[in-house]
Length: 135
Figure (cartoon, rainbow, N blue to C red):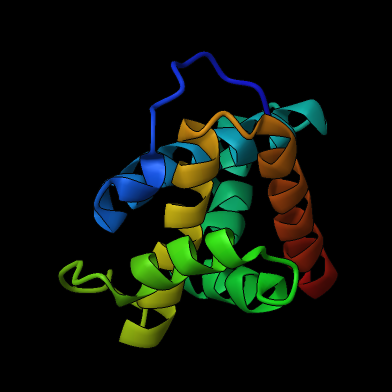
């Protein structure tokens, strides 16, 4: 995924929740872009499809599926995100799923901020595969 932005030096040193904050936006934008590219142009349908990908329980499933695909650094970033104190989970989500989803968002934020667009694309493709396999 290629988005405009400046590479941040040493993004692994940023707080995990800052990485997750960026990762949440990047992940959702990537999903929206993917769905539009698939030909979905009705806004209501785009919203419904996007929710399938960005819900905490779905992101948690993605994180579990990715665990053996991550480098040591990526796994450490995701673990920091998962263990960060991030408040209350959204309605309809349990604490464990919410924490794993925060780990995924931290990983996405880290890859984006470090300029690893090819690796980010691989992670996003794997995430889409997990979601579509369960569909």
